[in-house]
Length: 487
Image 1: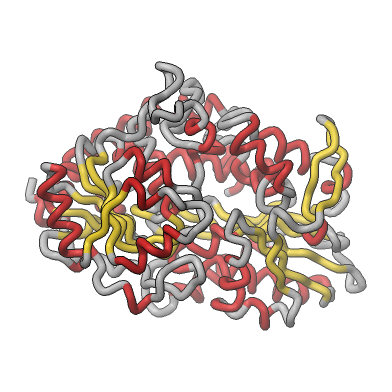
Image 2 (image 1 turned 180 degrees about the vertical axis):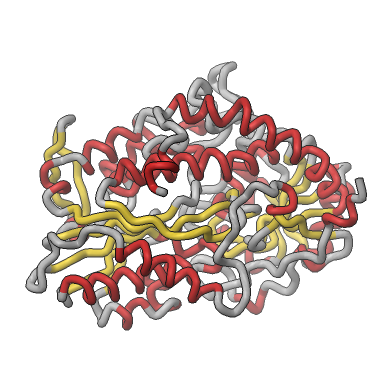
C-alpha cells in the first residue's frame, strides 16, 4: 500500500472566532495543522461507503444545503399552523459549531421562509437554547444574521430563565417558558452525535426537550442525578406530555455525517426521525469512533473555537475521544470514561472510588491546548492528562473563568504553538498527533498517525458493519428497514 496516496495537504481548520469565551482571534498566532509533519486524511477515502456530502464542497455548497432543507420542509405536514398563529422555532447552540455554523443557520432561515410561504403565518420566532455559556447563542444569532432574518424575534434561552411546569407521566418537570410561549413549536436539530458519552445515542433526537428547552433543575438529570443511559427518559417524558404534544408541529433536522452535511430530514413523527438519526449516528460516526479506539498513543491538540470538550476532529468531539478506550455505543457498558457522572466516582485524591470506573483514554499521552474556549468545567481533563496551554493570555483566561479556576493548576504554558509541540514530542515519547480543529471532510494528523489510521480503517469498517452495528441497533430497538420507509 502506498500510504502517501491517501495523505494530503492539511485541510484548513475552522478559523478563530470572536467570543467572550475565548481569546481574541488575533492572539491565535499559528494553527498546529500548519506545522511541519502534518497531513490530512479524507474520510471518504478511509471509508468509501460514506455517503456523498452537500457541504463541504464548491461555491454552491450552502445553496445545496438550502435546497435540501426546502425540499424536506415542503414534504412535511404544516396544515395545523394557521395565519393568525404564532410559531417558535426551537434551536440548540451546538448546531452552530457544525461545519462552520452556516449550514445550521441556513436550515433555520429555510424553516422561517417555508413556514411563512406555506401557512401564511408571520409571527415566527427563533428560540435558541444554550448550555452553561448563557450568551453563546446571542453571539451566534448576530454572527449569522438570524436576529435580523427573524425580524427581531430571535432570542437566546438559558437554563436559568423563567420556567414553566410540565406535567408528565413521571411527575412535574420544568421547561423554559420562552420555548413554549407560542401556539406551535418546531424542533430544529441535527444528527451530529456530539455528546454520545452522555446520551449514548438513545433518543438523541429527543434530547433537547430535556436539555436546551428545559430548566436547570430538569436538565441536571443528565449530568448529576441519573447518569448516562438512564437520564434519557426525562426528555421523552417531557416530549410525550399532553402540553408539549399540543404544541408540537414537526421536527426539521440537518443531516450530518462525520465528513459533512449529507442532507435534511423533516417529519411530524419525531420517533421515526429519531430512528433514522440513530442509524446515522451508529453507522457513520460509529466507524470514526471505533477507528479512534485503535490509536495506541498520541498527542491530542485542541485548536477549535469551542469549549475544551467540544472541539472537533472527523466529526467527533474531544470528550468522546477521551472515551475511545471504551465502546460508547455499547449499552452493556454502564459508565463511560468521561462524563460528569464518571467524575463523581473519583475521590478527592484523584483516584477512582470503584475499580469498575474506567480511566480516561490512556492513549492520550499529552494535550496541547492551542485554542479552545472557557465556559465548561474542564479541570478534570488537565488533572488527568498532561496539558500544555499556548500563550499567557489563554492561561489567564482560564484562570479567571469561574468554571475553570483549577485548570491551570495542572497545566503548563508555552510561548508558541511550536514550543508547545516540541515540548510534547520530547515528554510524551510519541510523534503521533491528532488535531481537533474542525477540518471539514477529513482530519488533520501527523504522518505517523495517518499511516496507522490508514492501516486500521478497512478492518474497522468491516467490524462495525458486520459485528458492532447490528448489536448497537438491536440495543436501541432500531431496524434497518427504517431507511426503506423513508425512501
